Image 1 (tube, rainbow, N blue to C red):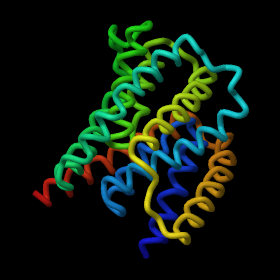
Image 2 (image 1 turned 135 degrees about the horizontal axis):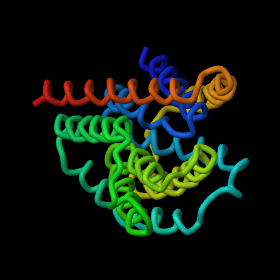
Image 3 (image 1 turned 90 degrees about the horizontal axis):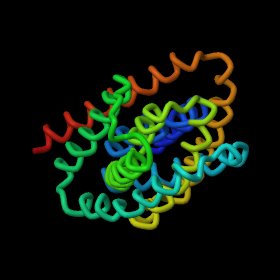
Length: 238
């Protein structure tokens, strides 16, 4: 049953990632930390999201904006160790509270389309990168600060997707280097890889059938539900 749930979670997260350009961690992390525990759930999300972004970047790397990506990624590299340190210091109920809370707040900010002057220009890139690096290594969800930066920078969807993929590759690589790789059995690795491949096919097949706005709302709703559930489990365990 646990392996079946793991496969379903990765399949759903992979489908969402290919459908919207970002969202594996938002959808999968709350469920993964409930299934595998906070530490293993986060590192699996880092590995899977990074691999998906690497494949997705192959077709759009020419649209990457180096002037924005360099400060974003350098700032993220500086805060990844802090996120790793936090996950190793807190007991599991507090980790669930922290991770669920980070996911919930980040999703609500993105849903509101928050516009903040601090998130513009190079200073905004540094701030978003630092927040994203910490959140990615601590809770597996580094995408919302990047999304808010892109929103405030006025990027189009065509510009957002390849840059989000590039950011995902680099930040998840830093996070995996800091947190390590997940401790899965050989069978679980096979199931995870198969689910990622199948999810990619499903997500790409749905791209032309589901309007972007509806897909985005679905992703954020699932993420919000998962974040609130993680908070609830953390409170129950205190």
